Amino acid sequence: MRVRPLGDRVVIKRIEVEETTKSGIVLPGSAKEKPQEAEVVAVGPGGMINGKEVVMEVKVGDRVLFSKYAGNEVKIDGIEYTILKQDEILAVLE
Image (tube, rainbow, N blue to C red; front, top):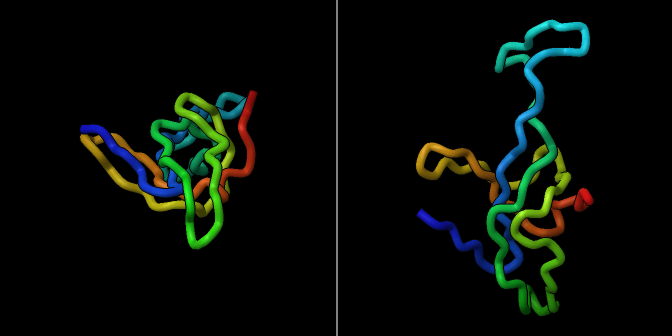
């Protein structure tokens, strides 16, 4: 199934972090903090949003940092994605 976000929305997939600490302690899933780094999976068209021109600055494949509590989590075909607005993305990693 493909996802096509509308307006200034972006679909991202979180990038998993290592499951052990530097000292070698294995962290269970419940103790790990969710990563704030993700890969862009789909980008909306932008355009006029609430009377303002929105130009999409991210593209599919970009690695981004986003706000900790941003967006809405959805599960599609068993894979977890987050759908958020472009302004909730803090930076593009290069």
